[in-house]
Image 1 (spheres, rainbow, N blue to C red):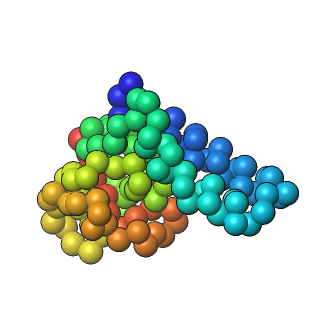
Image 2 (image 1 turned 90 degrees about the horizontal axis):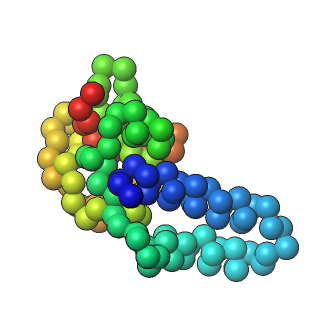
Length: 126
């Protein structure tokens, strides 16, 4: 399984868990909260899990996963919020606040998002 295949699987799993939370209205709020908050760690403990390196995706794969261009004049593809818990510890990235890019630590990424994406993104080859 490669980065893209695992990421597609992760996206489906996260969406499925979110669907359970809003569909199973008989679940107590505390239980539902613990289910969703603990889900990334549960996924990470599964056999075959590895952290996703967004630099290894193609532009088409990134767009399929929900990465979005910062603006029309930029090649910066912003990372979708749902992927943040599953990223490698360090990777090459850029930010909407400047044109520079370099190695970024996932633990230092601001999780503030707009329209489902972080202010951090990647520059991928076309």
